[in-house]
Length: 238
Image: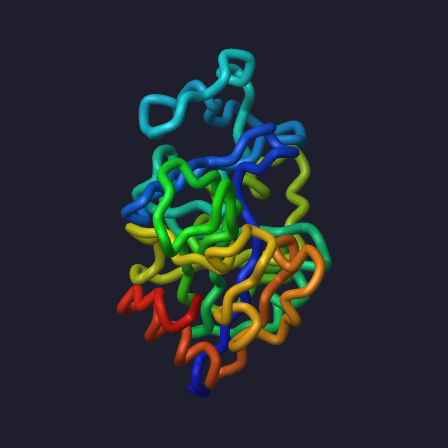
């Protein structure tokens, strides 16, 4: 097996959907809040009200009955069973589909800075919040899978839609999950300013709205990034 590569994609609540960001605190702990479910589903799915007791953030009253699009699915997060992710959009699905077993799908979110710290940008920033080490090659033809393999994705939000619409589905191994602390991709100067985890390691320039784009990491960059994630050695990369 070749050395692992990685792709990081933006996920989670933002100021467009559902209208607020989840918080990150001075010690790096954070909340992960999914976006709303925008499509019909085959059955009931959790709502923001269902998640509210598990979150260190107040959910607006007008959202408590709104279903959530619980993707990525991280085992251990409320109403989740395994580590899975699906995406219907080519801009994300194509680079993710190019990964292979043993590679990493990384997930970053824009978070509101609830308590200032010198390693955090003011107000808001982009932070890595979780990872999946792929247990199998990405699935690009769900219908062709035998029933036992489709069952792995049964609780994924895209599979639970009335019409399964994911162009790619990922299954993470047991080392996958949400991080205990968020890892900044934004520099301390501002949320829009990318730090060296973006500009020094990924193939992205860090110009324009980089925090909305997939970030690609080759094998060497991924090895360095994994060391940073393992040690949470923020300072050299800010």
